[in-house]
Structures are given as C-alpha cells and as structure tokens.
Image (cartoon, rainbow, N blue to C red):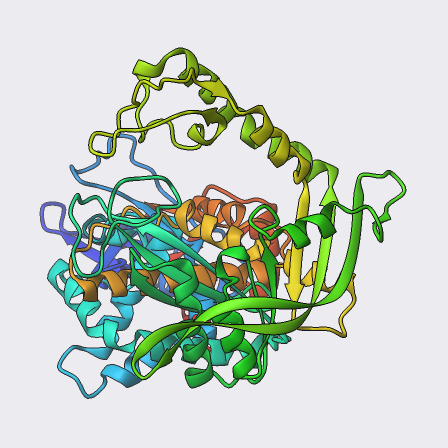
Length: 575
C-alpha cells in the first residue's frame, strides 16, 4: 500500500488516499484505492504535516498486514458488472498433485531431456502439468483441456498447436520416464517387491475401422469398436510400476513376456513372483518365468481343467472348513503337465513339460452365490430364445446359446436354423456348471509358502483390477480421440502420470479414501477472485484436512491473496 496524491484542478486541492498496488494473475500492474483521507488543505487544521502523517499511517497499515495482524479490506460496488467471458473461478486443490509431481521430479526429467532442443523445456513441462492435472480433476479432450487452462494458477503461455506438438516430442521418452519415476518411488516409499502384480485391459476408440495399432479384439466392455491392449505392473504398495500398449488383437497372455522383459531391462529389480489371473496362465508364460528365475502365483480355470483336477477339486477329502462352513480350502504339491510352443529351426513346435507346483483350492459360499446369480440372466435369455427363435441370432444370444440343446446357426448369416429336434434347455449343462460354483484354484511355484500366504498374495491382485476401474472412471482414459500412434502413446503416458499421482497421494493418506473421493475433494477446492488479488475459498472437508496435514498446506483458510497462493504453489515445486 502507498499514499496516493491526486490534484484536483477544479477545486485547486490535493487529495490524499491509501491505494494498493498489485499484479493480477497475468502479472499486469494494477492499483485500487482503499480509503480516502481528504484534502491536504483541509487536513492542515488537524495535522501540522498531513502528508508526513498519513505516510506513517500507510506504513503502519503495511506493517500490520505484513505481520498478518490486519484483516483484508474489501470494498464492494453493488453496481459493478461482469464483462462477457468473465470467469473468476480457480482451482487450488491441484496443489496436492503439484507437490507429488515435483517430489517425483518429473519436472526435472522434462527440463533435462528438452534443454538442448528447440522446444522450450519449461514450456513442455508446463504443458505436461496442464495435461496431467486436468486428467485428474477435469478429464476431457486435449482441445477442451487447453480451453480450460486458466482454471489453474500456472503459466499457460503456449498454444493448442504446441500442446499437440508436445505429445509428439514426449512420446519417445515414455519408457525412460516410467523407469525414472519408479526409481523415485522405490527411493521414497521402499516397496517390498517380492511379489509384483500384472493384468491386462483394453480401451476403445470412436472409430469403425482397424489400423496397424487400433484393432478389433475381445473388448472388456463388449463394444464393437477397435481397441488397444494395455498391460500394467503394480508393486506391493499398490503403486504403478510400468505399462505397455499392444495392438487390440493381441491376446492377453502374449503381453506378459514383453512386459517382464521391460522390467528386467529398465528396472533394478531382481527375482520376483509374478501374480496374475488365469488369462495369463499359459504353458509358455510359466516356462519363461521359470527360465529367467522368476516365480509365479496365478489362478487356474477349474471349469476348463482336465478330469483329474476337477475330481480333486470336488473330492471332499482334505478340505478344512471355517466355523460357519461358508469357506473351505486345501492344497497339494503336484507335478502338472503343461503344453507350450517353442521355436525349432524357425518353426513353432508344440511340446510338453512338467512343473512342480503348489496347488491351492478354496470354495466360498459367497462366490458360489455370485456365480449362480451371474449365470441366471443367460439362462433366462436361453429360455426366452427357445420360445422366441425369431428374436435371436448368433450375435445377440451370446452367453445363452450354450444352455440350449440342438441350436444351430447359419454359417453365413448367423440366423438360427430351424432344427429338426425341438430346442430345449440343457439342464445337464447347468447342473454340471453348478457343481463348480464357488471353487477357485491358485497354482504357484513357491513350494515353501503356506496355502494362506499364497491365497493372500493372489488376493492382492484386486488392487490392479481396481486401478483399471480408476483409469476408466475417474480419469476417463477412454474413449480416445487421438489418431496417430505417437499421440495415442503420449495420451496414455499423461494418463499414466495422472494415475501415479493419484495412487501416491492415496498411499500417503494410508488408503483411508478412494481415489474417487480424493479427486472429488481436490476438484471442489476452488476459489474465486473477490477483489484485486484477493481470493475467497468456498469448500473444505475431512479429506482436504488430511491432505493438508501430510503436505503442510492449510486448506481451511477462507481468504488468501494471490501472493500467498503463489507462495504455497511455489513451495509444492521444491522437491
């Protein structure tokens, strides 16, 4: 604040007032009059030297404000109008994400990689922050993200074209950035990576035709669109380790070997136990894991097993029940014969081998009820199909056709062919499936681990399944509108970085809250400009209180100056 003197020629008087000089969020110098004192000529009746006196008054006001002893003074003009396009809302919740972004030194990686290039290293870091923070809080297209860039207190001096250019520039560094980030995670959080978890999902595109990367395959969401496959590794703390993208027609099981090879090449990780579901449990994958010294814990399909294994599962001998008889388990060490292919003289040759493994089988009453409930809609559709053949064809009776006897489809049209034998419900098929409801089998190379330890290890896989739900729900990774492979790869890199920030913040909070709840609170942590560079905050909850306690930001203050806000954000950028 300073003493402002304005000479009025008409009255031939000099008027004194206190004014505040400030810079707006764009750095433009402005000032605002806070209080009028009167004309020097009139004030001489009260003060020997009005100018000297009020200079001291202003100095005292500055001292009190500096020491936070004086309240912020706001003057309101009831007739002041908004200009078209005015949007005073700013998000402050992203400060928590900024803290983790800089703790992992993502900014340093980008600045170092692009320092010798024509594209400004600071600009590409600012673009990356916009894309990552927006993916967490306001997921949308790149164009919409750019148009909403002023929601953050960040330097956004770049064009939309530069945003797209940045995607091209960053794509070649995707592998290096993943391993760089995980090196920092290992150093800061020290996960025990005896076991690492792996799973595969896919993401669809709003296009109709395949290309070399986006191909039609088995979509997890049963959509007809072209997809890409993503394989993801997660550590013992539930934090992402790395990911890889594959063409949409790649079978899940074929992604594990290249992803493990990536770990072996880029990460300082020794022998690990790979934990995965039954879709990854193939002879080739098991032989490869054992060949490189890794272990495995994987589920094995009971319904698709051979007669010997099914008989073992259904044999009551050896099962140990809980008190309520709602759960039972048993295990055995067993030499399982597996089939796989290997390359001999340039040709794929089928061969067999035997692996010694521990097999743990358990049954849960809850799982049995769920299996029955999940099968019932297909049975109901099968019954409807039998009575209404004209309604169905090969495509729209998926899941129900296996429960219908004598059902035949035209190979060319997919229409149901009128059968000589009357269609009927396959009661034997249903009864056979019901026998195995609730049974799960886990196979492992870890012979010395107890059955409970193996079950607990496998149950950790739910975290990676939940992680995929986060990427598709909270982070809205799909549908994807990028068209070139470089931009698609870069899009998923920004989504991966957003996922890492969310998971690390959740870990810091001891997993007290879901990612959904954390992001909801950060998104609501907004403020709006009420006057000059003074901002008022309008949301505070338990989640923000806990986040503030671990990153040393007081989210409960109702009013802050722009200077204070930028000081806090500057603090988050110190790794």
